Length: 448
Image (cartoon, rainbow, N blue to C red; front, side):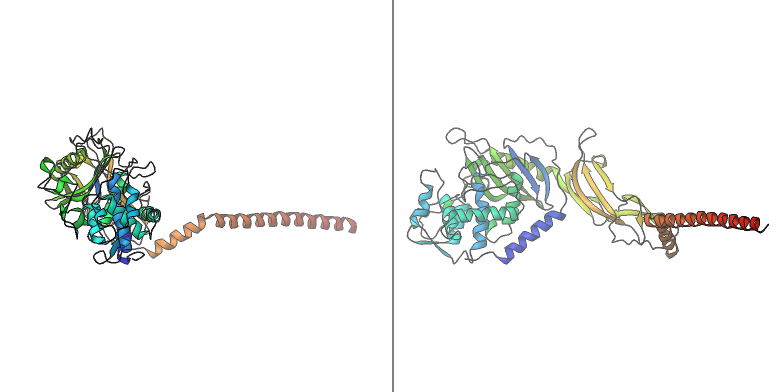
């Protein structure tokens, strides 16, 4: 067992850094898809841009999608999942008694050991709560509560500020919640970890020592069992359901060079009464819409003039054209025109030479607008730089410095003090002069 893999920590930092500079996709494009899931986030994975959202920041119960975080923490604390053997203890499995948990036959191995990799498959493919608690007990060194602390610590590290876990399996608890947006952050990170993508896209798996393979709960990726729910472009990732959480699903789809992730929480579900897979039909419909109706388009190139910037201290040049620092691309509907794209700039009133083509002068924000009556929705931001180098004039610089000095507060204070001193000196001189004249007049009078 290890504390944290250096690679995983590095990847986390990288993901957070990418998120900071990626296009600010806060847009939710209109569409005709009718969805029943109460919280949805659909993201283009090529640009990290949100293309559709529905109550993505509302707190929801995640059910077994919790196991995405369970995988993250367990993976980062187990040195080699293929060779690490984990003891299966009856007292750990007994924590799930009378909970109605989904199980993966881990009880057949009580008194023996299972490889960590087999437990990963058992947890993620058939959604085995038994595998989840065994991994949590092992990593927590006999304390599932300690493992849950690690889950919450990792959530904070990944910027999941609206998430709190109380268990590793997703059984209902009022204080066990997340959001669609936080779940996207967790899953994006999990996809950078070894085995995760392969495991979560597996439909059947043979666990060592068992007679029958375990089978996925995700009918979207199962060609043989999925029936009408099978969607040929879908891959992974995790299902979940409880009466309180409803149906939950995190999945991806890729086609024609485009990839999307959908997070769907709280679709209608009640065991024994309403058991339709609305998350899967919602996801498939959203994937069909996004893969056929959206495209990545270059909105602005590095040669596209955006605005004119006033410049000072440049001889014979009063302004310079500003252009994007890099080509700006965004996911947009295929049928939109120029009237649907609005660019607003944030630049200073005047820029001071010298300037070069790498100098950031301001920022341009690109918005999408469905029509003239619709609100602006932010697509992306890009730094603005000069289209050419602008040299500084030494003479104008000296003049500017002198002008600054002459207008400065302390210069005016000093000038005022000097003026007062001269005024006092003048008044004093006048008074002294009068006294001298008076003394001379008195002296002449006495001499007479």
